[in-house]
Length: 196
Image: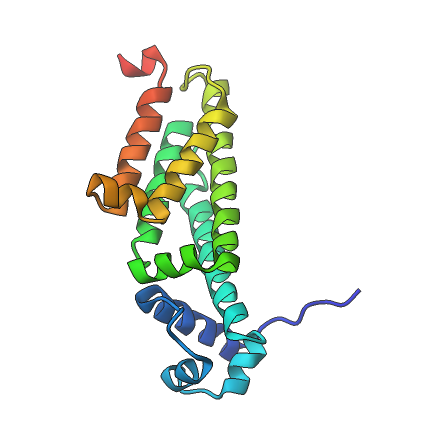
């Protein structure tokens, strides 16, 4: 069994720079030559991160979503109330996604391997939401519901927000859409005692 080599400090810095560049401008229009020039490094340095431009894009997209998951978990750590956890989690998604340009989200939607990384993240978010709903039902702050169904529906809404479909159709920002999703879930799940 071989262990994966940890990236060097320079590689971690380049990955962060690539993420910032891709978040601002997308990734489809860049060649490796373009990226090497923009980052002031050699193509071989980029090849050390990934063997092709396409794999580099997937690596950056995966890095972005992994960073989101880590920050979301930090954000909800220590919160005991399921309502507050769910609200903070959705607010955190909104804030994190506000860093991504429309070009970045379009490139993800149009490049299957990056879209797969995004969909994996959406499924993980739906699973976390389901766990928060289950906890809220157990704690008596949410009414008895089919948690898996509600979480999957929330996951589809999250996907619609992240791909820009909901924002375009409703004329709202992603942040506004996540706020509305939070209100929808929290209001719809609340027990009568919580509503009064």
